[in-house]
Length: 555
Image 1 (cartoon, rainbow, N blue to C red):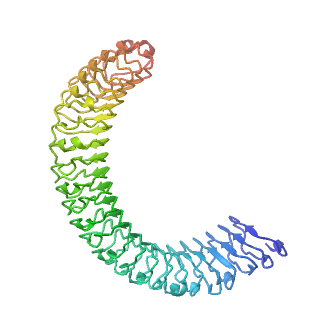
Image 2: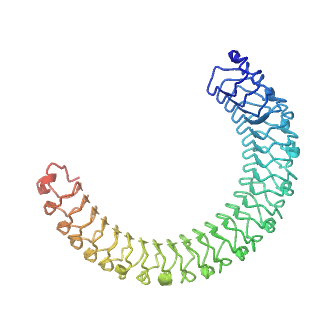
Image 3: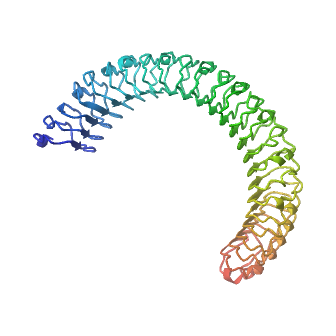
């Protein structure tokens, strides 16, 4: 770059991806230089940059041949340096770079020391994640620091160096070897701390009383309690996912700004510590096998979402008074036998109770806002009585239950999808009669013997009766004007004359319907484009004329 010598007005140099460029010589007289971008180049030496009249930013990221930043030493106008994922093993003596505000050495796997940053009183941001550092004590005099990122520094065992940094707002220290966070105790401006995946961390002592702290992430740590957060009055979110040694949420009670609690897969046995968290919006305690009740949530009037899926809960009575609740997932809670606690929740829109021990859904009759209900594989559930008053219900999935009949679901005027597959005790779809909303009826592997209950479902678009061995015809769908798809593979149907008048039908699957020998009755269906008929008794001359060339076979 010697040809640039004498270019005294030069402000920007962009030589990124210049693999054959080894040095930055020729710029020493360019005192107006503002930016040097040598990202992903072949440089190995950055000597010769000017200490000019304005602020200078240098980008040498991904420069694998660059071993150190010695060439920047003493540049009083340097405000930003990005050496991320470069080959540097040292950051040299940057202590003379008194204006430096931003340093990025992310992913410098050979970098084990940041001593060169010592005492930089204007340094605001340091990203040293995924480096080989063992300590960060050199940061103790960097009094303007706001953000420190050291995540993935697996050899780092202490946050000493951050103690007393009054301006520090963000600490990212996940996946390190730290065993405590006491060094953060004097960081009065701290807003966010991430110590997730620090498996040797057993306590959050050090965060106590930090009045500006908004979010703490401590997932997959060895934390045994979170009482240290009791004085963090601004706290809005805590993540203690997979903290197996954590047994209670004591310490959070009364935190009036707390909105989100994530403690899935943790060892908690109760959530009574959430009582008094009046702003709480979201709680995730899924897969908490030792948790038996939701006591502690009662009366929380801002709570909108609860995920307790696959937990050990036996009762949901603790939901009484949660008038803002919109989403509830307690699927796979095998010990849950009753829905007592949900009755009268006026905002509940989505409820999942699949694979639980419930025997009745009548408690939902007053949940007038309910739109999605999943009760699949509740083997003790034999009736859907109680749902007929739900005028906003759009999706109902009751697969694999013991229901014998459908209630008058035509009153569920918004219903779009009805799924009752694998309900072997269900013999009839009579409760579907007259459903006016666009719906999808999925009925595979059920005991249904006829489709008569679908008469009058004028907006039906898709019907799945595959594997219904006892179903011998489709007479109930005759003339349905919007039906586009019928899946009847492996069913017992022997004729398809019931599809006469289904003028919108586009696709029919009757694969392996062993009793079916003709499709001629479909000749007048103008939109029919696709027929799957492998494994039937149909011969090509039994096809509608438009499909005479179709190879249907008997395989």
